[in-house]
Amino acid sequence: MRRSVIAIAALVVVLMLAVMPAGAITYGEPDGNGHPNVGALIAEWRVPGVKEEFCSGTLIAPTVFLTASHCTASLQSRGIPDNQVWVSFDQDVDPVTPTTTLIQGTMHTHPEFGFSGPGGFSDPHDIAVIVLDVHAASVYPGIQPAALPTEGLFDQLAKKNGLKGQRFTAVGYGTHQPEIGGGPPTFPFDGKRWRSVSEFDALNSSWLRLSQNNATGDGGTCFGDSGGPNFLGAGGSETNVVAGITVTGDAMCLATNVIYRLDTLSARAFLGPFVSLP
Picture 1: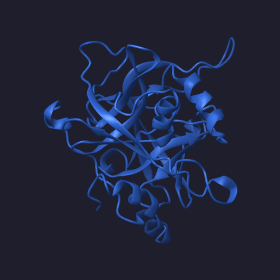
Picture 2: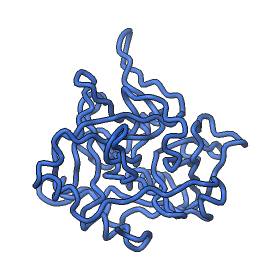
Picture 3: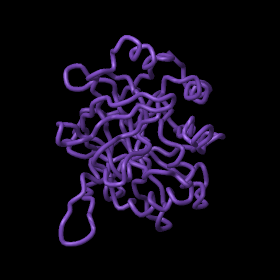
Picture 4: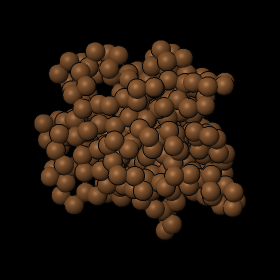
């Protein structure tokens, strides 16, 4: 969702991912105060002394911000100390100015981050947290953490055909759908929190695949806001449950949003030391 398209693309090469990381909002709408517990991960990742948005994420406990490991691992690979990151729940984070509200925290990348298993996609462990120095509510009065899914929720729904037609709401900051014509595609960025709605496409052991085909009425995600949440439900049926983390998709942000499931034993094993699990 921002100028970090180049940085994220470079990260893909480094990590030898098969597809481009994703995380912005396509064919969506400004979120306003619709999801106040969704925030931006901020770091001095390009220019020392200049704080900029890098990824997105969600408050899941008073001092725990959920994001993606490929975000935190990328920052660590740049030599950024674990405790030199910030989170902002402001509706607009570009540019980051002295008036931007920031909460400092410490990165915790999954120790087994990286693709593994048959075909390389069995479990990438692409999940991380930022432990905030203070309670988010002490800086943002009234903010409430999002909820996590129960163990095996989506396997259970799939057995009952309960995922067919299920919609999900993606939220994040960053670039939008590509603008094509007169040169290479460009991905507009405004630094604001946006949301979009996708429909279920497929279930894998570690992933939920969501359609973001605008021709069928779906929106989705794009560059620069990986780590953002995909809430179960949409519109009047939207819940506070984060089904998964946006981590990848197609290179042009036009077909599929692939999210890392939070109801698996693997994801829960990582989150357990940081939060109370449902």
